Image 1 (cartoon, rainbow, N blue to C red):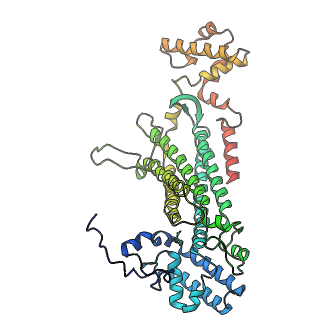
Image 2: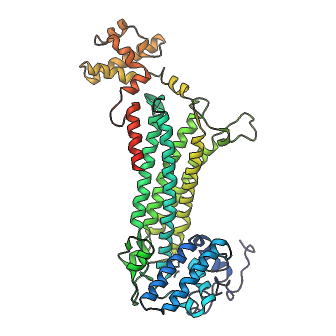
Image 3: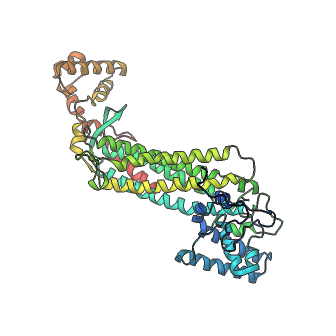
Length: 476
Ligand code: ARG
C-alpha cells in the first residue's frame, strides 16, 4: 500500500550482523534497500539456530585446523571465541539482532568483528547452503528429541488412566451410534496405540535425518582437504551425507517431521473431538475441570471445552505446515534455491504447536473426571448386547446370517413391547424365535459379561487391555 513503508534509495542497506557487512559484498555494486533487505532476511526465524550454528562452526574450524587448511593457532582462537559467543548468547550479554541476513552471517560477522582475519578464515570449504542444512538438522535432532519425550510422557499418563479404567464399561460407537460395549480403558488404549506409532514415526524420521551435510559446500563439495567424517563424528551425527547436491537440495527430513507432526495432531484432534462429545450435556461421560474450561461472555451458565476445541483447531496449522513444505519443494530445480529458506518457519511452527498441544492435552486429561456410572448406564437400552446374542446362537451351531436375522427380529419384538434389552424377554418368548436359546443366555448379556467375553488379542476384556497396556509401556 502506498505510503505505508518508506521506500529508501537502494544505497544504504541495514548493517549486517556484527561486522556491518554482508557476506557477498564484493560482487554487487548496489544492495537491496531496507525493505527489500528485510524481505530476504531469515534472521527472525533462523536466530533460533544460533547455538547450533556455533556448534557447527566450532567443529568445522577445528577440522580446518587439524587438516592444515588454516593455522592451528587460528583454529584455536576461533574455537575459543565461538565458545565465548555461545556463553554470551546464553547469558543474554550478546543479542542476535541488527540487520544481518541470517544467523550464519550474524555469527561470522561477530567473529570477524572480534578476530579480524582469523574470523574471515572460518568459512573456508563451507557455504551457507550446507551450513543452514546442518543447523536445521542439529536443531531438529534436539527439538525432535524433546517432542518425543513430551509424547512419551503423554502416552504414559494416558496408559495409567487406561489401566485405572480397564474395568469401566462404556459404549463403543460406530457411526456415532452405540455399537458394542467396550471399556474406557480400551478406548484410551486405542488412543495410545496411535500415539505410540507417532513416537516411532518421529524416531524413524530422526534416524534418517542423522547425517551431517557439512562439506557439501554450495553443491559440489570443496577442493580443500576437508574431513567430513571427523566433523560428522564431532557433531554427533551417525555419518556424513552421501551426496553433496542432495545434501543442500533436499528437505525430505523436514517433510517427514512435518508429516509426523500433522499425523500426531490429527490424532490429538480426534481425541479432543471425543472429549467435546463426551463433555456435552447429552453425553455427560466426562466433566472437564473448571480450570480446563472457559465460560461465555453472554451466557452465564456456559462451561465450554475450549481447550479441547483449540487443540482440534490447531491441528490445522500442522496440516498446513506439511502442505507448505510439499508445495515449497515440488517445483525446485536441483540443487539449492533461496525458496528453501521458507522451510524453517513452517516446521518450527508444526513442532512448537505439537509440543504445546501435547502439554495442554495432558493437563486437561489429568484433571478430567470420568462419569463411569453414566457410561455404564449408556450400555443399556441400545441393544449393544445384540451381537453377543447372535454369537450365542452361532456357538450352538446356527449359521451366522440366520443368527443375525433371529436376533434382529428379537430387537424388533423388544421395541414393539417397549422393552430396552433382549434380556427383558422371557425364555418362552426367546425360544419362540429360536429353540436354541437357554437360560444361560441372560447372564451373558450384561455389559460387563459382553466385555469379558471379548478376550481375543486386541479386545476390550480387562485382562486383555492390561496386556495391551503392558505392550505399549514396553515400547516406550
Ligand atoms: N538463509 C539461507 C537459508 O536459510 C541460507 C543462505 C543460502 N545461500 C544463499 N546464497 N542465499 O536457506
